[in-house]
Length: 380
Image (cartoon, rainbow, N blue to C red; front, side, top):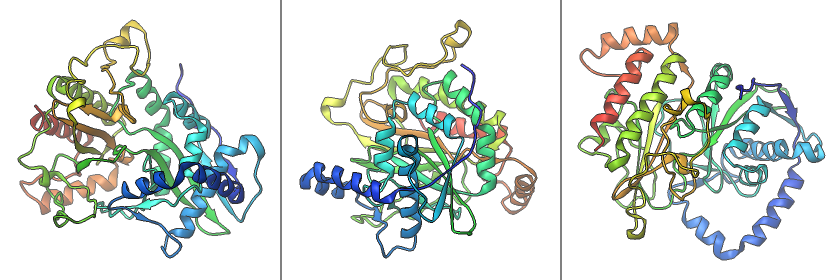
């Protein structure tokens, strides 16, 4: 199957009234007990309520995204802002390949509940959101980053077809938002690597270097959820058991692909969740082909590169790897930083400023090799 082209851009109008009615109906069906349990699972996250500075923007994002999946049915009317869908057909095909129904996607991202925000440890100026069920992650992007992502989209889709168990984050949509005659804002949607979030005890963002890679942990007992970094992980290991060889092989395959795209500064996201007794032992002898695996290209020359594994019976199974004692959430994110002139100059400056120390701005080949070395050194 040929990789899809980015496809046309279509400007979609919103129907917040219809979305609110659908959300209200769904909410009443969920019942009080479900809502209380859902609220409890949001520990450390903050609802973007009417007093929040980003409330108006996220409401427009919700209404527009609801309309984006509804437009093929009833063409909702314009409501004073424009939400653009970029490469819509390509992302729709990708969502279908993951078994994600448009109705579920619409319900999670539409006005059924407020988006959630967490305290990000990223140095970028991007805004980060989670859908109310924490299944989808939204992040604002600069126009240049969106251009890079769309330019790489055909090869990204092809890579996922060849390696259906790839650790790369699954991108689900790219959109633009413009209010009246204001400046366009761009944002991406992807599956959250940290889903389902219940019982997760630690979260890390790993780049395989040391400069600016420490986060002050939250005080003991604090409800704040922080994503820690490389230096916070010192002295720890990931015990993958028989799945270690699969993980290291997949890291090599995915970082080689990113090296070919000439990108760097991506992160290995990682989280820990202790397995219950009845969950242990289900992850042994997993590195073989199975009908339960996500399907990819089946030609003989590709079969050796599939690097398949038996997927756990859990939501978001592609990003979940069960070790003997722990469940690990693993994924590679932030795939749009190109090693151009600006990054080459930054590399030179950091070489002078941090002699003898490791930092993130290095050549794509060095970056890929170093992150794979980190994975090998910190797994058993």
